Image 1 (cartoon, rainbow, N blue to C red):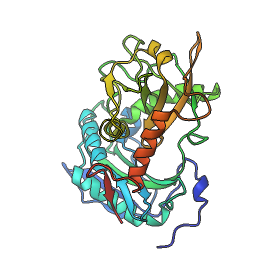
Image 2: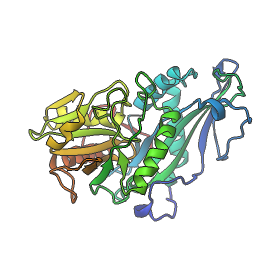
Image 3: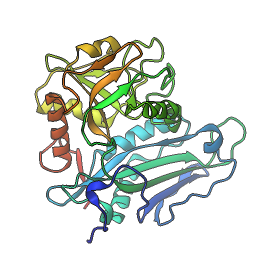
Image 4: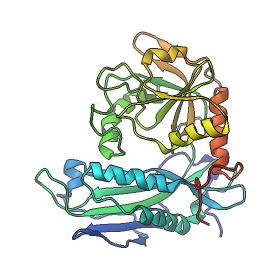
Length: 341
């Protein structure tokens, strides 16, 4: 198989249409089998529910070329399960989990020439999405839905690769108490767009959102979970009912406990604890694990002891181990690496 002629080491993180995508439709109470298509466009009614009541959800995952030149995905069954739970919360018909994994495999195989070669630092980003496509003017769920998976080659999510980031605390909430922060709904990300652009305009990479009820505890950013390492080398994971359950975060917790022998605490983390932490990182499918060097507030700038030049020691071990598993350099837990080709 001949790869596409791209500058693989300088891809950036942006949409680039590839050759094939998968689409299935829900109509008359059931999902179609679905099929691959070359058409990157979707035609919708002007009254489609997604336009008016934001009935949509999505997932994010990646395919990689390993050191052995296999093409693999990472824990796709977990993405299938999370999307199932999201769909239930949004009154959408869950797409069958086994069919989800098979559809991901179809899309990756069909676009294998777009998977960045091993060693370039790139991956094939995979975006499953479901929308309420049926016309709906009254406030109610749609009666028809589209499930689609498309993919594109990408590089680093944050500019500068793994150089420590500067974050800020916004005057906005990401999610409401007892709301939808724990699911991967498009409306959550719409809520974060304005604060994110404000952060960028002020020279920051992302926002640190605090709990919506008391503004006391650390939650997550607009697009990633957060983890800390305290001064005793304990990995500390913020816990809240309105944090999205990241598959990358869950995997890093297992890596820390089972492979690196580190102590892990999953608990509410007060914002005023950040100044006493040794390391802070963002984690998620797109970013994997990106270090934080500074958090800005109106009162002060909090600098992490790990500094603004490099990733902290424990964070680096976590990132290197997880990416080593994904790239086939390190043997990970059974079922994590899902071979496609």
